[in-house]
Image (cartoon, rainbow, N blue to C red; front, top):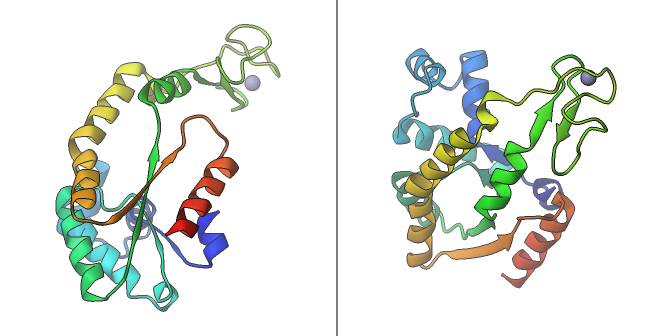
Length: 198
Ligand SMILES: [Zn+2]
């Protein structure tokens, strides 16, 4: 919604890395192999990939970075890169209550037969744990288990939270937007208002 509204490209490191693995372009076979083994890609590799992307003509008038910077090293690299080019940034911090994330994710179910998604809290099936369409017993995705989700949140706290602290203490414009409960359109409006104020 944001990139459409502003007419600038969406630069997602996750998408670029997955695309790189699929097509073999932009990343080395060694990096691709590491990613498939679940090993985190090195900061230098991600930094170089982002720089290359931002040098494309469509990013001249601005861009939305998504999933980057994810580590302190990447953040330090990025602010230096932006400052060298006189580019002013706004950091949008989508704040979500952990208990709400956990409730939302652990409630997710899917019909293994027809793929219909459910949520025991937000969109429950008519009969407990059974698909409305074909009566198949619903399943939970392996990575939606509470211990897996907590591990992911811990990784966020340890790796990405320091990025936010760094950007704030560095005097960067950080805008906190509450994204706990509302649909995407409402969160988008909040982001729009926050950007106008900047
Ligand atoms: Zn079904």
